Amino acid sequence: MSAAHAQGPLQMSGEKAAPLVRDAFASSYGQALADEFGKALGKAADPACLGAKKIAVADLRQRGLDLMVKRGTRMLEQSTSLIDSKAYDEKFAAAGGRSASSELVQLANDTDVKRYRELERPIRLTAVLDAVFEQFDRYAESARIKIAPVSPLADGNDALLAKDPTEASEKALKDFVATHQPPSLQRYLKLSENAADATTAAVNTDQAEKTGPATFFRGVEADLAELCIH
Image 1 (cartoon, rainbow, N blue to C red):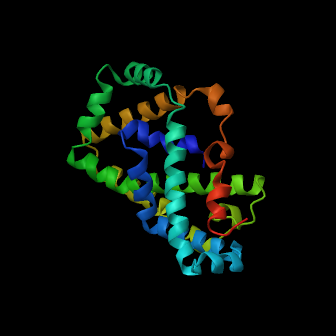
Image 2: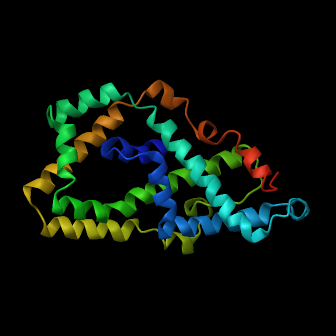
Image 3: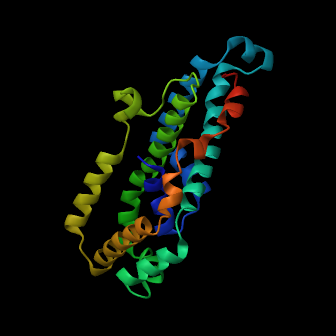
């Protein structure tokens, strides 16, 4: 899961990075990942250092969660900055019509669209979580930070993968669309597709090619050192 893929929903929905990341980590899957990260921190932390700093191992879970919310927010903000807003508006208008942006906002108030977005929400939040931990794990490996990977795809954690809501949410969406096909929802889905395409086309490719885990997590060593991980 790329950071660019995760930031797409921000451009399309107008959501801010900070509340989106907080909601992601507040979800059941987000809490499960926070538990896993807390375990990884506990195993990697120097016991003597923890004792000297009077940090209980049990406290590492919340500290780790706070760290990832902060860094994840920064990651999405930096990823979103790769999108040329003017180019996005032009490409979206060209595909969806001059009033596409305002129409998409208005459609969000439609009853069927609201229900669709509720069913889709876990997928969006999971995309954010997966991107954050994938980028962190990749940076930790390249920087030789001695901490176990958290992403279930990285370490083959089947128990954690089983908590990923994506598959169930996708099925619920498919079933919903199969039984609800009002013009408002069809238009919303079409505009959402147009917005996603416009987002991809508006990314500054030169900057994107230079963007990677180090862009988002460089300097995290200092944060981890505060948690006795060296």
